[in-house]
Image 1 (cartoon, helix red, strand yellow):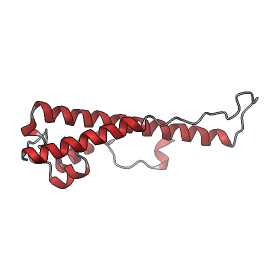
Image 2: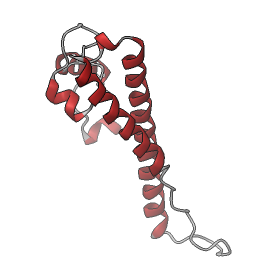
Image 3: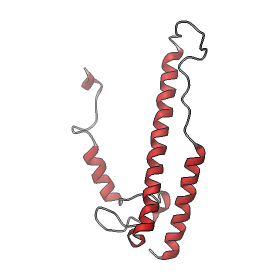
Image 4: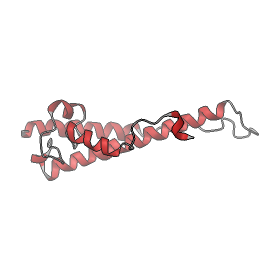
Length: 131
């Protein structure tokens, strides 16, 4: 990867970082709409909990992407020649993958191996697994 390509990726990463920071966290919905209300509405409670869970998940994902963007910027500063190379196998990550996610550290093959290792053993879960 040449210097002009690295500069383009640096700009894209800086823009992505600014967008994530500017967007801020997603505020979870309050579980109870009226603070003075007594008791709870059994119909709205599950929906409120689900909304809180979704907001929390989105915030965790955004924080994870922001950390990866910051790490990619650090790689560009510390060792610009290694940017765009897989940290596991030292092979090129691939232009298409970098265009979609300029903060990735692994090539497709190494990412698949890592995902396979993190997956629970035994394949898909079935409804009867939780009895």
